[in-house]
Image (tube, rainbow, N blue to C red):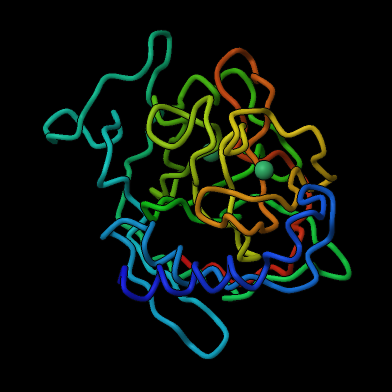
Length: 250
Ligand SMILES: [Zn+2]
Ligand SMILES: [Zn+2]
Protein backbone atom coordinates (compact mmCIF):
# COMPACT_ATOMS: atom_id res chain seq x y z
CA UNK A 1 0.00 0.00 0.00
CA UNK A 2 2.65 2.53 0.97
CA UNK A 3 4.56 1.86 -2.21
CA UNK A 4 1.53 3.09 -4.12
CA UNK A 5 0.65 6.06 -1.94
CA UNK A 6 3.97 7.80 -1.60
CA UNK A 7 4.89 8.06 -5.28
CA UNK A 8 1.43 9.43 -6.03
CA UNK A 9 1.68 12.06 -3.32
CA UNK A 10 5.15 13.01 -4.47
CA UNK A 11 4.02 13.42 -8.08
CA UNK A 12 1.13 15.53 -6.84
CA UNK A 13 3.49 17.80 -4.97
CA UNK A 14 5.71 18.22 -7.98
CA UNK A 15 2.84 18.91 -10.33
CA UNK A 16 1.40 21.62 -8.11
CA UNK A 17 4.65 23.41 -7.25
CA UNK A 18 3.89 26.23 -9.63
CA UNK A 19 0.61 26.89 -7.82
CA UNK A 20 2.15 27.29 -4.39
CA UNK A 21 1.74 31.04 -4.46
CA UNK A 22 -1.97 30.79 -5.09
CA UNK A 23 -4.34 31.20 -2.17
CA UNK A 24 -5.32 27.67 -1.26
CA UNK A 25 -8.32 28.34 0.92
CA UNK A 26 -10.86 30.18 -1.21
CA UNK A 27 -10.32 28.92 -4.73
CA UNK A 28 -12.75 26.51 -6.28
CA UNK A 29 -11.27 23.14 -7.13
CA UNK A 30 -10.97 22.89 -10.87
CA UNK A 31 -9.17 19.56 -10.98
CA UNK A 32 -10.75 16.82 -8.93
CA UNK A 33 -8.62 14.93 -6.45
CA UNK A 34 -8.69 11.13 -6.38
CA UNK A 35 -9.44 10.06 -2.82
CA UNK A 36 -8.93 6.32 -3.38
CA UNK A 37 -5.43 5.91 -1.90
CA UNK A 38 -6.14 7.95 1.22
CA UNK A 39 -9.48 6.29 1.77
CA UNK A 40 -7.99 2.81 1.48
CA UNK A 41 -5.19 3.65 3.89
CA UNK A 42 -7.40 5.34 6.49
CA UNK A 43 -10.48 3.15 6.85
CA UNK A 44 -10.29 0.47 9.51
CA UNK A 45 -10.16 -3.24 8.74
CA UNK A 46 -13.91 -3.34 9.45
CA UNK A 47 -14.55 -1.57 6.14
CA UNK A 48 -14.20 -3.47 2.88
CA UNK A 49 -13.19 -1.27 -0.05
CA UNK A 50 -13.54 -2.16 -3.70
CA UNK A 51 -13.37 -0.20 -6.93
CA UNK A 52 -15.99 -0.23 -9.67
CA UNK A 53 -15.16 1.98 -12.61
CA UNK A 54 -14.97 5.56 -11.33
CA UNK A 55 -16.57 4.66 -8.01
CA UNK A 56 -15.38 3.43 -4.64
CA UNK A 57 -17.61 0.94 -2.84
CA UNK A 58 -17.40 0.69 0.96
CA UNK A 59 -19.05 -2.10 2.89
CA UNK A 60 -19.43 -2.48 6.66
CA UNK A 61 -21.70 -3.90 9.33
CA UNK A 62 -22.12 -0.42 10.79
CA UNK A 63 -20.91 -1.23 14.30
CA UNK A 64 -17.96 0.53 16.02
CA UNK A 65 -15.60 -2.42 16.44
CA UNK A 66 -12.75 -0.02 17.25
CA UNK A 67 -14.32 1.71 20.23
CA UNK A 68 -16.42 1.26 23.32
CA UNK A 69 -20.10 2.08 23.70
CA UNK A 70 -22.86 1.27 26.18
CA UNK A 71 -24.77 0.00 23.17
CA UNK A 72 -22.46 -3.01 22.91
CA UNK A 73 -24.20 -4.29 26.03
CA UNK A 74 -22.80 -4.94 29.48
CA UNK A 75 -21.57 -8.44 28.62
CA UNK A 76 -19.41 -7.22 25.74
CA UNK A 77 -15.72 -6.36 26.21
CA UNK A 78 -16.38 -3.06 24.41
CA UNK A 79 -19.02 -1.97 26.94
CA UNK A 80 -18.61 1.34 28.72
CA UNK A 81 -21.13 3.31 30.74
CA UNK A 82 -22.86 6.25 29.07
CA UNK A 83 -21.60 9.77 29.83
CA UNK A 84 -22.80 11.29 33.09
CA UNK A 85 -26.46 12.23 32.82
CA UNK A 86 -27.03 10.17 29.69
CA UNK A 87 -29.29 7.15 29.50
CA UNK A 88 -29.20 4.54 26.76
CA UNK A 89 -32.25 4.35 24.52
CA UNK A 90 -34.10 1.02 24.29
CA UNK A 91 -32.83 0.19 20.80
CA UNK A 92 -30.38 -2.68 20.38
CA UNK A 93 -27.33 -2.03 18.23
CA UNK A 94 -27.58 -4.57 15.42
CA UNK A 95 -25.27 -5.59 12.61
CA UNK A 96 -26.14 -3.85 9.37
CA UNK A 97 -25.35 -4.53 5.75
CA UNK A 98 -24.09 -1.14 4.56
CA UNK A 99 -22.90 -0.39 1.07
CA UNK A 100 -21.86 3.18 0.28
CA UNK A 101 -20.85 4.05 -3.27
CA UNK A 102 -18.99 7.31 -3.82
CA UNK A 103 -17.06 8.84 -6.72
CA UNK A 104 -13.31 8.29 -6.56
CA UNK A 105 -12.86 11.86 -7.86
CA UNK A 106 -15.59 13.90 -6.20
CA UNK A 107 -16.59 17.13 -7.91
CA UNK A 108 -18.84 20.06 -7.07
CA UNK A 109 -22.47 19.57 -8.08
CA UNK A 110 -24.22 22.17 -10.21
CA UNK A 111 -27.24 21.92 -7.94
CA UNK A 112 -26.70 21.04 -4.31
CA UNK A 113 -29.05 18.42 -2.93
CA UNK A 114 -30.11 18.78 0.69
CA UNK A 115 -28.97 16.19 3.20
CA UNK A 116 -31.80 14.34 4.90
CA UNK A 117 -32.44 11.93 7.74
CA UNK A 118 -30.49 8.71 7.50
CA UNK A 119 -26.91 8.07 6.48
CA UNK A 120 -25.19 11.05 4.89
CA UNK A 121 -21.77 9.45 5.02
CA UNK A 122 -19.56 6.82 6.61
CA UNK A 123 -16.91 7.23 9.27
CA UNK A 124 -13.52 5.57 8.85
CA UNK A 125 -14.69 2.66 11.03
CA UNK A 126 -17.80 1.94 8.93
CA UNK A 127 -20.31 3.63 11.25
CA UNK A 128 -22.97 5.76 9.56
CA UNK A 129 -22.85 9.53 9.92
CA UNK A 130 -26.20 11.32 10.35
CA UNK A 131 -26.89 15.04 10.36
CA UNK A 132 -28.78 16.80 13.17
CA UNK A 133 -32.14 15.29 12.27
CA UNK A 134 -33.76 12.39 14.06
CA UNK A 135 -37.06 12.52 12.20
CA UNK A 136 -38.21 14.41 9.13
CA UNK A 137 -37.41 18.09 9.74
CA UNK A 138 -36.93 17.37 13.43
CA UNK A 139 -33.71 18.34 15.14
CA UNK A 140 -32.51 16.17 18.01
CA UNK A 141 -34.09 17.41 21.23
CA UNK A 142 -32.56 17.27 24.68
CA UNK A 143 -34.09 13.87 25.35
CA UNK A 144 -32.61 12.32 22.25
CA UNK A 145 -29.29 14.04 22.82
CA UNK A 146 -29.18 12.38 26.24
CA UNK A 147 -29.22 8.95 24.61
CA UNK A 148 -25.97 9.63 22.75
CA UNK A 149 -22.99 7.67 24.02
CA UNK A 150 -19.47 8.98 24.53
CA UNK A 151 -18.89 8.68 20.82
CA UNK A 152 -21.83 10.96 20.02
CA UNK A 153 -23.88 8.08 18.66
CA UNK A 154 -26.87 5.85 19.34
CA UNK A 155 -28.85 3.18 17.50
CA UNK A 156 -32.20 3.83 15.88
CA UNK A 157 -35.12 1.41 16.00
CA UNK A 158 -33.68 -0.67 13.15
CA UNK A 159 -30.56 -1.19 15.24
CA UNK A 160 -28.50 1.09 12.98
CA UNK A 161 -25.91 2.83 15.18
CA UNK A 162 -24.98 6.30 13.94
CA UNK A 163 -22.92 9.35 14.85
CA UNK A 164 -24.72 12.69 15.23
CA UNK A 165 -22.10 14.67 17.11
CA UNK A 166 -18.37 14.43 17.65
CA UNK A 167 -17.13 12.42 20.58
CA UNK A 168 -14.33 10.59 22.26
CA UNK A 169 -13.48 8.37 19.36
CA UNK A 170 -13.98 10.39 16.17
CA UNK A 171 -12.76 13.93 16.64
CA UNK A 172 -12.89 16.53 19.36
CA UNK A 173 -10.97 19.78 19.14
CA UNK A 174 -8.65 18.70 16.34
CA UNK A 175 -8.11 18.27 12.60
CA UNK A 176 -8.68 14.53 12.38
CA UNK A 177 -10.16 12.91 9.30
CA UNK A 178 -13.59 11.61 10.36
CA UNK A 179 -14.78 9.90 7.19
CA UNK A 180 -16.35 10.56 3.82
CA UNK A 181 -19.78 11.91 2.99
CA UNK A 182 -21.91 10.39 0.28
CA UNK A 183 -20.64 12.83 -2.33
CA UNK A 184 -17.11 11.47 -1.84
CA UNK A 185 -15.64 14.50 -0.08
CA UNK A 186 -13.82 13.95 3.23
CA UNK A 187 -14.99 15.45 6.50
CA UNK A 188 -12.61 16.64 9.21
CA UNK A 189 -12.76 17.83 12.79
CA UNK A 190 -13.25 21.46 13.72
CA UNK A 191 -9.70 22.53 13.02
CA UNK A 192 -7.47 22.69 9.98
CA UNK A 193 -4.06 21.04 9.89
CA UNK A 194 -2.38 24.25 11.05
CA UNK A 195 -4.36 24.10 14.30
CA UNK A 196 -6.68 27.00 13.52
CA UNK A 197 -10.43 27.05 13.06
CA UNK A 198 -11.25 27.69 9.39
CA UNK A 199 -12.80 31.11 8.87
CA UNK A 200 -13.95 30.80 5.28
CA UNK A 201 -16.36 27.87 5.33
CA UNK A 202 -19.08 27.97 2.69
CA UNK A 203 -22.79 27.20 2.96
CA UNK A 204 -21.97 23.48 3.04
CA UNK A 205 -19.56 23.91 5.96
CA UNK A 206 -16.59 23.16 3.75
CA UNK A 207 -13.78 24.78 1.82
CA UNK A 208 -10.80 23.91 -0.35
CA UNK A 209 -7.54 23.84 1.60
CA UNK A 210 -4.63 21.51 2.35
CA UNK A 211 -5.15 18.72 4.86
CA UNK A 212 -2.72 16.25 6.38
CA UNK A 213 -3.93 13.53 4.03
CA UNK A 214 -4.28 15.83 0.99
CA UNK A 215 -1.42 18.32 1.32
CA UNK A 216 -2.05 19.78 -2.13
CA UNK A 217 -5.54 20.79 -1.13
CA UNK A 218 -8.96 19.25 -1.52
CA UNK A 219 -12.50 20.35 -0.88
CA UNK A 220 -13.47 19.05 2.55
CA UNK A 221 -16.17 19.49 5.14
CA UNK A 222 -15.60 20.36 8.76
CA UNK A 223 -17.65 19.31 11.76
CA UNK A 224 -19.66 22.19 13.20
CA UNK A 225 -17.77 24.49 15.52
CA UNK A 226 -20.67 25.13 17.88
CA UNK A 227 -21.53 23.14 20.97
CA UNK A 228 -25.15 21.96 20.81
CA UNK A 229 -26.99 21.79 24.15
CA UNK A 230 -23.55 21.64 25.76
CA UNK A 231 -23.33 18.02 24.65
CA UNK A 232 -21.44 17.89 21.42
CA UNK A 233 -20.60 19.35 18.06
CA UNK A 234 -22.73 18.20 15.16
CA UNK A 235 -20.77 16.38 12.53
CA UNK A 236 -23.01 18.12 10.01
CA UNK A 237 -26.16 20.13 10.50
CA UNK A 238 -29.00 20.08 8.02
CA UNK A 239 -27.55 21.43 4.87
CA UNK A 240 -26.70 20.37 1.37
CA UNK A 241 -24.04 18.25 -0.21
CA UNK A 242 -21.27 20.12 -2.00
CA UNK A 243 -20.98 17.32 -4.55
CA UNK A 244 -23.34 14.78 -6.03
CA UNK A 245 -24.69 12.26 -3.55
CA UNK A 246 -23.85 8.60 -4.12
CA UNK A 247 -25.89 5.69 -2.84
CA UNK A 248 -25.98 4.32 0.70
CA UNK A 249 -27.95 1.11 1.11
CA UNK A 250 -28.61 -0.63 4.39
ZN1 LIG B 1 -30.11 9.37 15.84
ZN1 LIG C 1 -10.33 22.81 6.31
